[in-house]
Length: 365
Figure 1: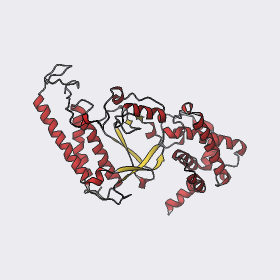
Figure 2: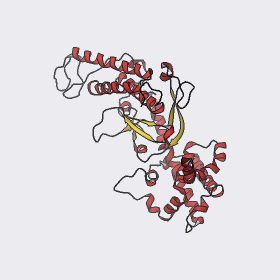
Figure 3: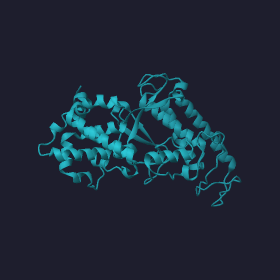
Figure 4: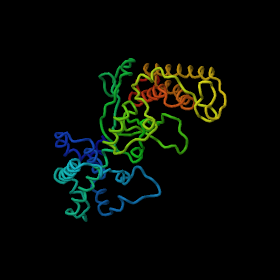
């Protein structure tokens, strides 16, 4: 009850009166997220920014991801928007301001020294800024949907776990995570939990050294053909991807080539490719092909054991076994290698089971 009262005091009192009209018109999620941002700021926060606009652009020596200014300074790509999109955003801005003024107590709770005549166009511009920036900076908040169940009720048979799909329940914008760049071969994955009010965490899929950049995927990695990925990224995020998967034109993950792909090994001395004769093509040092193939076969067998653990709903043990497998693939096998991506997907599914169904695993968290 305390949580409900706190939420009403903080922002629901400004959102709820608008909901019937917004739902009726199937308002896009980024518009609803914009309303949530303004509502969370509240009349006092918005009044402060109106009277001290320098807060929106000033930088600090310490990056505070919980600060509203971090969200405000996210790139908007407003120059890339077409006339129809710009017109729609302007109209949405005007409508939201009218709703806040006429349907909610928002304007009545502004600081007394706020001039309403100049405040209205300023608030309209602030809302417009977010309508332009949120489509390419907001993240889908999803939950795992297994079988026909939802939430914590689901069957734990292998087929249900194998075919589970994500379902979006909200959108969110984050001061830090929204800054992570894209790669079609990402090194991190995102996890959210619908029971934690949008809390989000980042988990690495590869070994990283201090200073390595983080990359997430704005698409379905490289499951789709190169041209489709590039068009999607240009249409929605206004850039052309130059990650390794795109620059080397890796085949889509659905291609049959990945299934029986033969591994190419790295030299343990210089990390370049070992030729078929067992000698490094760069430093010329000789390796032992039989030992390499034997170790590889063992790691592949370990991967399949971990995969079976996941579909048996034993994610904790699977994660413990996947760590050395992924480390081996990264250090010893030349990219791209199909089973590396299968192991990463298996790790993601194990993490999903722990986050979304913590009370249903063989080993309780």
